[in-house]
Image 1 (spheres, rainbow, N blue to C red):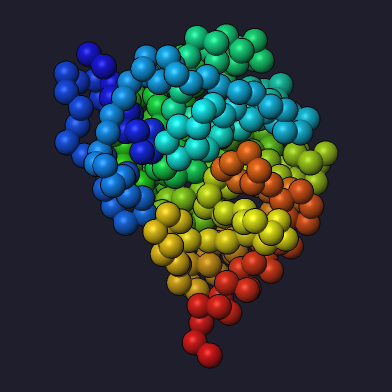
Image 2 (cartoon, rainbow, N blue to C red):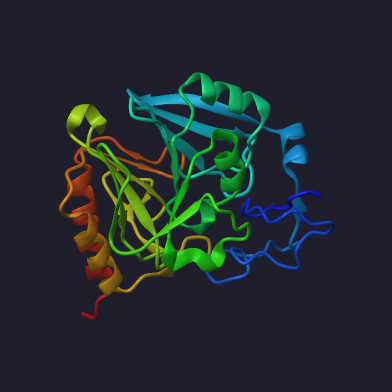
Length: 269
């Protein structure tokens, strides 16, 4: 039986003869059901019309994105390190070519995902590379394909070994997380954020939202919590969810100034 995927967000469900009645990720305020209604596809159908592209982002960091774009259009990031590669966030397409390329690069020892919009086919990736999936427990209700490989974590931080730490920021989702890579940017530190912290058109700033497609802001208290969560960590660069979502320098300063600007904008005057 096929494991159906939501066309709007890429979320994969348990194998079934018929597609599900609804997508829990799209049928709520942070996402949306397209005007034409809920639609479904399968991995085989997706692979027939799409492929994955690979790009070196910086030493030790590789981007993986689907072309043409599918669903939300994010790209995943593969951190390459001697103790085992880690995949940050997921793209829905996993085909034979992708599996062969990633295996040639050393495979995947762990998968870490920022929030439910990028859960997609995480179980397929996990099975292909025999890798555990690390998700914050606060978002477990959005898992549409339960699997023993999923390891829910609680609290504010999750150590992935070596120089990688998941940090719960909340905001976009209760369990929204970012990944700190201390060895990135030649040892100056990198923050991988999905769109928990969103890179905007002016790369001197970032932003924070409850819902991006529906333009629903977050309260000042949530922004203070996000800023406080990442404050203890040094990071020169920040990589968001999309190919061009990059703050190339002074990323920690950019996040701090952006939080202050946001709080001022939503506070009473």
